[in-house]
Image (cartoon, rainbow, N blue to C red; front, side, top):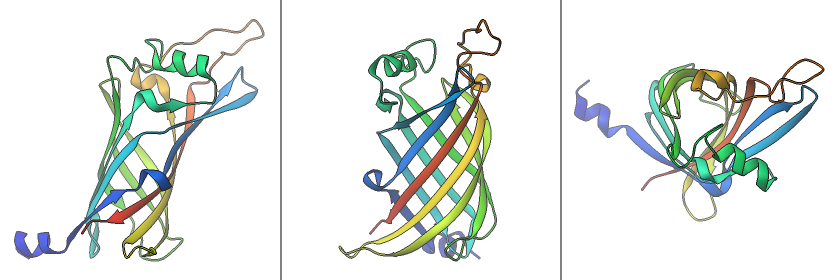
Amino acid sequence: MTATAHDARTTTWQLDPAHSSIEFSVKHMMMTTVRGRFKNVHGTLTGNEERPDGCCVEVEIDVSSIDTGNADRDAHLRGADFFDAEQFKTISFRSTRVEGHPASHGDRFRVFGDLVIRDTTSQIVLDCTFEGRGPDPWGKERAGFSATTEIDRRDWGLKWNQTMETGGVLVAHRVRIDVEVQFVKAD
């Protein structure tokens, strides 16, 4: 197949931020789970449906849009102890490969890619589910996906913590990430 024929079947989809969420959860004091989300997210999905293994997902997150429901905690997370949002304004993800062929609602697949936090890049694997595809009331075509992964925040230099008198740490090292995204096919 020529590059031109391949390009003709490549489609671009834009993330719909109003119908998407990137959320995280982490244990606090080893006993409760604190949840948060990023409210300002942009992304693009580019691919050929006949060759989904060659698709590319690129996502950019505005670090300052972090929201855990607590202004003091959010300010601490934006600060130098954690994300240092003043110096490192974005978190980004770019897929490197896809395993599986998500053709029908409920199909599971895996997306491998590079997650960049604080200018540090580490590969992660997203366990994904194809949630469906279809037209919306405004004549656009949409596709939905969910994904989960778990990371160790220390891999990106997010090492701040406090040891507790009873043992353990104030903030767990493991962070669960849950993604629900909807993409709109570009015209």
